[in-house]
Length: 417
Ligand code: ADP
Ligand code: ASP
Ligand code: MG
Image 1 (cartoon, protein in one colour):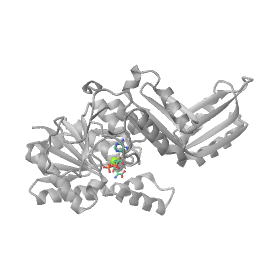
Image 2 (cartoon, protein in one colour; image 1 turned 180 degrees about the vertical axis):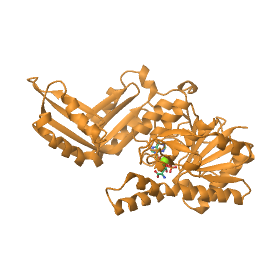
Image 3 (cartoon, helix red, strand yellow; image 1 turned 60 degrees about the vertical axis):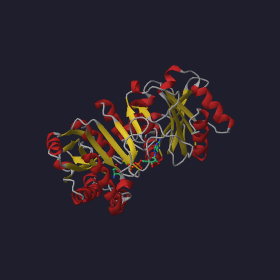
Image 4 (cartoon, helix red, strand yellow; image 1 turned 30 degrees about the vertical axis):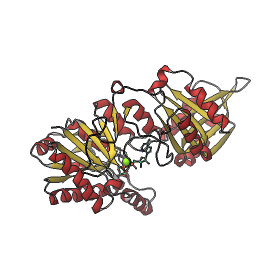
């Protein structure tokens, strides 16, 4: 017998029929003798609709009310799944974040989980009941509902798994695992049987939205084994395949991966904007002067490139940020122009960041050089580069995004046979 947390995303609970299908997946695990807790997302599209209504009511809305509105989608699916389970003879009860309670910090709209009361959930599970938990939400110190940021049900699920000491957290979604790159963009993408926590963390932060970044962080810290699989597989299909598990991807410790490739995957994010400050005076404190005010406005700057001019007196500073923050950043920088001391500001939207990820890069030289050469051969111009021990990211024109992803995917031998 194992204790399992099963999480179902939006497309898996898109309507009542899909929810009945989810109930069958849960029933199968209960009948196999496992203790099960379930975490659900809102029906596909529901959260987008709620966000749109909130924005329509007022673009400058109150974050506490935003949370009151957008958390409601999960309340509906938790109740519906509890009913669907009861209807097929599985004892179940729905829970909203505050009923557990799942406590968060006060950052409404993208709150972090502070603690989860696991004992009550455990005693329900040992009594043979299935708690069906509304994902994406918790209760903040001000006693109001808080949401965990878009895609946050993944984080709810991993956090619940850690709190109840689950043997595994199964993430059921609309693809049957984590692929070498987004399978909706590159049909040649291959499913990975296993991926290390660190690689998944990079993949998620660099654009692979299959898991919320924080859920991977949490799994890594609490050593929760996460298994990504499809809710579209028949609930009564055999539950063991060649590796002892059904089709899917296990996210686990690096030492559990026997056959390590140099490159594991390619990720990308569109909607990056680039800002260049020309002829900034080159003196200590200048970077703080530029990036301090942006940080205060909660603008996340990503890649930063600085070039000293020939005379050594001035420098050009180029950096990237999400396109949605571009206008605000320009306004802030122009307001501080005299203080920072720059001659001009250039900006470009429509950039895309493509990243190559793999822990094998630690012990292999030349991976970056290969990428630059392959992109050059395709006429793709690189605007900026950043690297770490296990990833290389390049900033390119968005028009070349798909070409670059496909080129790198083939270059590192990731295409399926
Ligand atoms: P859910 O609603 O179940 O949370 P998401 O839409 O958040 O599902 O995540 C699943 C989607 O993530 C897939 O449909 C796929 O298009 C996308 N995706 C992006 N990168 C990858 C990847 N490397 N592997 C698998 N899926 C990916
Ligand atoms: N329903 C929320 C969203 O769409 C949370 C989630 O699906 O994980 O962002
Ligand atoms: Mg998701």
